[in-house]
Length: 303
Length: 303
Image (cartoon, rainbow over all chains, first blue to last red; front, side):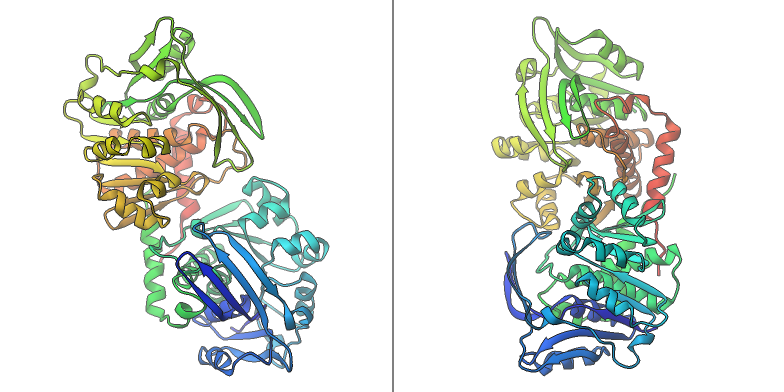
């Protein structure tokens, strides 16, 4: 079933201890949609400027991503982000942010998009996330991400959004900040009271935790020898997660756990290279193989 | 089969955001032996001063721990450590260390200890760890821990020790520091070349990784709602790990994985209270139940 993603398409300039990329394709919606495209049809909603090259649009199309919702603002400039990672690759240091056309992003769903069944609201202003939801007819599943900036600056809008969302996907620091609580287990309980049925806490190289009521699932990260660039790992995770759910249509807990593992698989591929290089060059066999590796990685006998 | 542990017995004064303990029983050998005592007979080698109260010795005895190797230096003072944890409970901040009698610790194995089959050399000077090994007759398994202080100050002795050790148990930061390498997977390869067959990397609330040749096992930590005091978690882990191996006598990879989970179980209990309060009050059913919970926590279906 079709997947709708609303988020950013950007040019990222990234430095890590292992190399750098200049004005490479990035943004939450780019990572999400490329990752999810291995599982189903993705409807992309984002905004770019007239400096956005056709080759990137062709790249999306080549992965079967619908770009009818990718607005191009003539005379505008595409969102740019510049960041650096030190040896601790879990922490991005932002050097520069130029929102450009993204600062006036007003997502309007093209014909057909409103029927999307799986909706992922990537990290954007929660008021805009809500506006998108108002345009979707009968979604089967709504998931969203956010960041500390909105937790601090638009808490009320975020809380309003959470009442309409089934799955909330954030990172560890954000979960603690949102709940005002250092214990992640307590933070999860506080967050789940805000509305979502499921909370997924991303922990970078330590994997992810999924909270559903009182049940917790601990998912590993794939232990990579070389991490080239962590940018987009969280959105690649979300793409694999939502993509797998959409491809199966099963929202039971066992299947949600499998979906988290597919999320971890896609995130692990993404960080192997800059930009979307690795995500664009995958095949289904590699994805399945890595899933099986995560199964072996975590296997132990009962007593 | 009997387990030998050589390490510290100390008085710990600990402050956390959730409370404090003054001059409570601590030290690597105390945590290890109490944890391992649920699985088999432990021979304890450590040193204390004449200020060490008989009640703590009775406490060890009550758990079936052999204290013939616990030297008491008349007129000496017991090792004292004072530390604080902030909300990030993965990081201890040492406020004061008084080595006292521990500074001249010269472990001598009493009769019978030399026949111990499972040996754990807790975090002490690697030269002393080697001296202990020279007194053991035919051990079936030798494991050791260390810390950044010895990695920096006694690297050669530590490397010499590692050639005689099957299992090396250290934390994440120490593994990176020892190998001079930010990638944990690469660091593990470098460390395994120094001699050990097995490397276990402890990651606090994120669990542990076990490296055996090219095989990796990712073990979860139990997600606790309240962590009272992380002191001794690593040694409680080692106690559960070595204890389970000694109780089964099976050093195959599948059993090593189970042992890591028992280590994680014991560490999770330990951090629920200050000092040895929780570890001293366990029963086998609770241990088995938590093992089963870790199994459920990590379970996902194959594809």
